[in-house]
Length: 249
Length: 263
Image 1: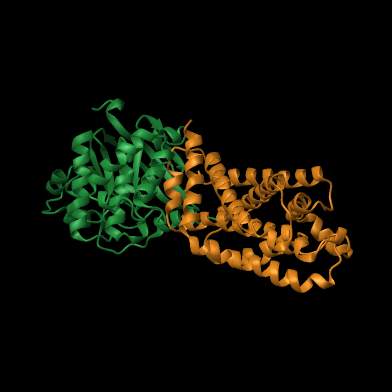
Image 2 (image 1 turned 180 degrees about the vertical axis):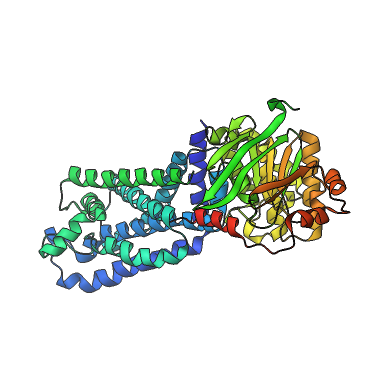
């Protein structure tokens, strides 16, 4: 089945590029580690979490979600590079449907993001979060959902973006708000009205909630509700991405 | 008179407009199997736009183009399988090795694993890059990248090879080699070639040449007959006689770039 091989090789390309750039793998761990250990330790004394959870434990799933968010969006942004450096043409003249191109790209970016998330997950013992094998598997699944949804958002933006110049803008006005409003760093139940509304429209909120439920056993929403929101968001992003790539035809 | 089965390319009344600007204006021509067909014209004449339509990257505004028996609009995937393309601008992944760039291409073109692994050394041998197969492309010079792109364009054994200014910015040695590879391939496999170039002496290898200007074909014939007809010693002379000496803006090309970077 030709289309499956095409998806496979697009996926593999993202992985190869990920492992090629080892300094970047290490560099992008810097920020989440700062958040986790500096912010986590500093704010712990003044934090009263649900069920006696320490602050550093509480934000651990949030920081992992942040890692996955950033990696998956940046990974999708490589489409803009590919357009600028011509490689996208090589893909677009190949006998492959636009649907498969988006699928390959989505799985490639998501896998890379989950790998990066797993590096953070390995720090669990240092934070005091105890993980069983089942919890690890569930966490990987939750990370993958976040990665797929946010990578889809990234592809939708990248398909419309002219050049990398707008990139910083996207980070400041879209990715950072998505992260800050997701409840990655604070509980969602003691917020003023306006902030409650903003956190509820952020799709990442539900991803963070799922991850927190899986790792710590606490959550703000019904598991099926969270699953539906994040899956629904991923699905819509995916449809828009395929539509945009078909326009390019 | 040739029948349609002798033809690798058949174009009828092909027109492409970008926001009111006509880049290609009702162009018609045919390319026979095994032919080397040259498309010459000043910058902005509509060469790249025509190539991009023929290789299914752009849809024509009107008119018809059939490549290897398939309509480029109705059956783009069938066309894509039959063609190989060397783009004007580089299009390699420089984070991958030479081999991996080829492997990526092979899988995208639905070649089976064995054929890919057999063809990779073959095409790398052809362009004399076999020793560098495991090197990352970012370490390659411009000429080596170009040669690798030629290897890639030939990997899936296309019936028709598009060469869009393949020797632009290369030294004379590499340019000569590139034509050696391509003409060797043509002899061995009966490959048809559709090329554009600004180097008129390179256009001498063509069986027939279409000179295009302002989106229209001004004349189409063999290099020898064109020179005879316009009483010129060189193709350069013919070219300047037909298209004038005025310097052209790159209007049509930038329309294509605009499309690639569309909002």
